[in-house]
Amino acid sequence: MRRRLRNILSLADFEIAARKHLPRPIFGYVAGGAEDNISLCADAPAYRAWSFVPRVLVDVSQRSQQVELFGNAYTSPFGIAPMGISALIAYEGDLALARAAEKTGIPMIVSSTGLIKLEEVAKAAPRSTWFQAYLPGDDAGIGALLQRVQNAGYRTLVLTVDTAVLPNRENNVRVGFSTPVRPTLRLAWDGIVRPRWSIGTLLRTLVKRGMPHFENAGAMLGVPIISRDAVRQFPLRDRLSWPHIDLVRRLWRGNLVLKGILSAQDTRVAAEHGVDGIIVSNHGGRQLDGAVAPLITLPEIVRAKGPMKVMIDGGIRRGTDVLKALALGADFVFIGRPFIYAAAIGGEAGVAHAIRLLAGEISQDMALLGVSSLSELGRDRLAPAMDMIPPALCRS
Ligand SMILES: Cc1cc2nc3c(=O)[nH]c(=O)nc-3n(C[C@H](O)[C@H](O)[C@H](O)COP(=O)(O)O)c2cc1C
Image (cartoon, rainbow, N blue to C red; front, top):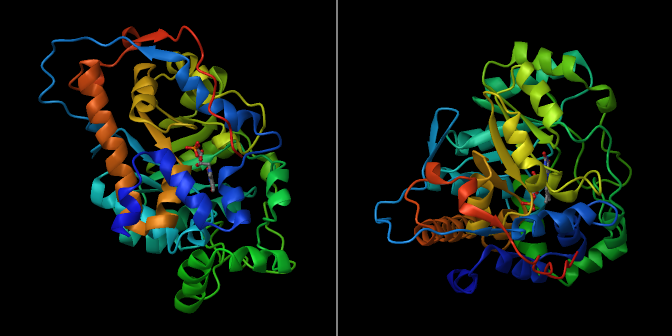
């Protein structure tokens, strides 16, 4: 394992290793976006449109990347975004992510489409875990879910609000992926040619934990992950609107975060409804294809945020990306795919390695930029890049 991780020098290297490790449908599910991958491919290049203006001869020997968010001191300004079915991608994926986050002092958001009970993840990592929910469309269902999340001890609730309906993920169909997973000959073959995953993740899970279920969608146990004809239920989600946020605000005593905001108008409305923070996000390009890259709307959103915290995700892969987001006014950032690739190839140690790599880059970049604390970052540290570097060939 150590040797495997030694060759991983950046977050991008995890994707290269994961492509060789995961069956084609599973890798395709993680890497892909919606329809033509327009938003997916726009997220990272938005960061390249900015360049730095470093200051020199500044004593940066005492620099710190610590950040305070919702009363917690985090060791770095980044966390792990919620990712569904992590435990099918990596053995006990949610636990690997949560434990690494807990040990390194960063937050990890547990997905409501997870396969490990939210209570078990909270127990493994009580300080670092937040919970992400897709709200059920009925008031009783909302109340029951919030009660369950509160009972498990979560203090920060993230509501993902960019999913009124399921998106068109024809990419998944093309690579043979569906949820619940439908057993087919092709899927069996995809597993056979990736024996490390088939034995180390799938078989090990079935033997040690039994058939995984969608554990966190509501107050009750959901459908099994592998099934011939079960359909994943997203009842009545397209009727959700701001009064539902008011209901949640009345019922939920902890921090309330909305994930999937991309407009300054919605930012203002969220602040009026008593929301504590937002995650500016196009869901990693997995919902509305063509939705704007979050970094593009970030400055306008920061101007509209009022007392809320503003976080951002999508395409962040380098320490320099993190610092650019903060310089444009974000309080914190989240990263998705690289961490689940890290869990797939290296479990908890892989995720810890990813966290260390990114924290190391941030520390170096702060020194080279001439800042000792993240609060020194502002728009004056950035200039528009003269030429857009042509985006790296977008593989998925
Ligand atoms: C495999 C996978 C599963 C995801 N599942 C969820 C989810 O259950 N809930 C959610 O709010 N976002 C989900 N997302 C979106 C991420 O939380 C995040 O917004 C996105 O991955 C950030 O972009 P990045 O992967 O480029 O860092 C998922 C993303 C991936 C890659």
